[in-house]
Each structure stands twice: as C-alpha cells, then as structure tokens.
Length: 307
Image (cartoon, rainbow, N blue to C red; front, side, top):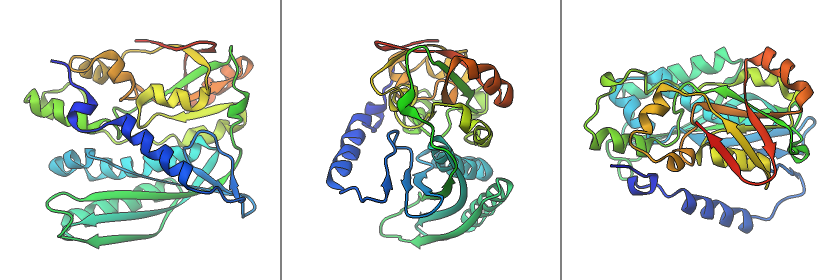
C-alpha cells in the first residue's frame, strides 16, 4: 500500500491556496523589501534592514514527546526559523517562542532549557515569548512556535539565476520537520517502532549556519521545508527547470517503500535540507568552504530529479 500526505490529513495545495489568499488580501507597505522566495520578510525601516519569520515543529512534536527527545525538538524549532532567515541572506540574532499548552508541566521546562542552550550555541538569544495554558483548546497535546529576527547581510540575487548555473545541496540530518503527519501515519498503519529502523528518525533539523560564509558567492538559497524539494526549487527557479541527481539516503529509501516517488518529492527533502545555486566558477570555492554536493544544473523546461 502507498500512502499520501492528503490521505493522512494534510493538503499541501489547500495550504498554498490559503497562503496566496493572505498575500492578496494584505496591502504591502512601502517599507517591506521585495523578497521573491517567501522564506522571510525583510523590513526596510532600519539600517541595516531586519528579516523576520515564523515557523513551528509540527506534528513531529508528538513523537518527540513520546520519546523524550527535547534537544531534538528544540533544534527543530530553531532550525525551521534560522534556516529561513539564512535563505534570504540574514544573520539570525533574536528568537521568540510561543507554547500553547493544556497545563504547564515538567516537559515544558525541559524543552525550554534545551531551546535556550541551542540558541546560545548559535550566538542568539531568547528575547521574549508567550506560554498560554488553554485547557479548553489543548487537550493532551501542545504546540510550539518560533519567531526569529535577524540582520540582513546580503540578499541572494535570485532574479539572476539562469540556465547553466550549478545547483548544490547540503545534506539533511533526516526528514527535518516536514511531512510528519504522513510519517506518523506510516508508523501507525505498518505497526513500526522507531527501534526497528536502522537510522535515527527523530534527529533534529540541521541548522545551516555555515551558509552565512558564502552569501556573497551564491545566487539563490532554498530551505527545503513544506512542499518538499520540488517546491523549494520552484521558489528559486521562477519558471526555469533543473536536472538533479540525488545521492541515496537510508531514511529516504525507507519512506519510498510506502510513498510513491512523486509524492515523496513534493513532501520530503529527499536528503538535502538546503539548496544553493551558484555560477560555475564559484562551485569549487563554495563546496570547499561548506561541503556542499553538486546536484545538477538549472535548465529550461521542467524540473527533473533522479534518485
């Protein structure tokens, strides 16, 4: 049996339609910098401009709670925001959190302690937040959302991406924090335990701080999150195509037993959490600095991915 994200309860197209509705409904203020990828908003009323974004852990938190993986949960929350800011060329500095809970308990203390620890390791600070006890809304489960603020260093010129440019990828630490409603459906329906797997399913999302070193050498950055690797590529290719050849990963091989290939491409990162587009003459320098892998090239036409 093959599973789909929609059957598991998440409709990516419906989510994109809602996001487009919000964009159309909001009048863009003059101080909002034009940022075509949508990973973060750049506010041009300071010098230098600041970038802001918000994201959460998602339903992966259900498994983190079950197995007591608080540091991995905190890494997910930080990374989902941090990597979005890096993708628009900003250095993350400040973090805010929102915990919506039924009742504050020991696990929330453990989670926040890990969150503060990770932020300090990155040279960041937890500057504010909100913890709301709402037993009428949250029953049993709880939610964690992060808000990240950074200073713009150099916005990648995504509008300059052209056929012939080289596409690089930075390895993911796992499925990161997307597609977990589908993953949990597979685990439940196939009666699988985490200990039966040959890899660590709950590894925290990789934080791509090293990409700050190469902002001046890249044309575009794509943080692979919701919508999988295909949506990430579409964010930066803007109508162009690409040909990619991906290296195999054990966790991707595993999920492809239960999910069709095209479904996986539009749901998961397929082994790469950050995509970079560079001029050919910059390839050696970038790969040497941050250990990126050459995946393919930008081209006219469709997006073709070989795994």
